Image (cartoon, rainbow, N blue to C red; front, side):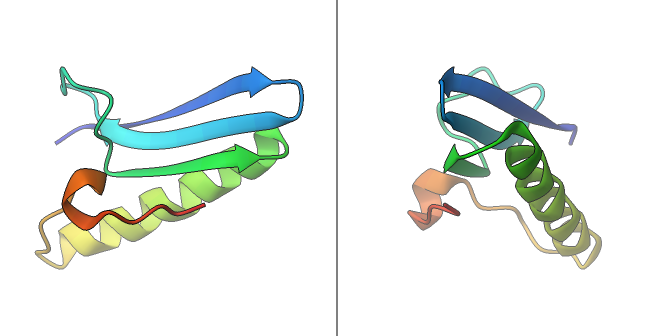
Length: 75
């Protein structure tokens, strides 16, 4: 699995970040997302921390659930 991080500036004071499979044809169902970050640096830092946690989970043999499966928002 190849994961990708996407960071988007969508209002003058808000940034969005998500982590998804690079080969996923439905980007509206990521593994993780954070909405409403105040800065690009905050969005990137949150995404990098979560990416490291996902990497550890996969290394431990866990299967990654999608947001639609967990109904959990990181923000």
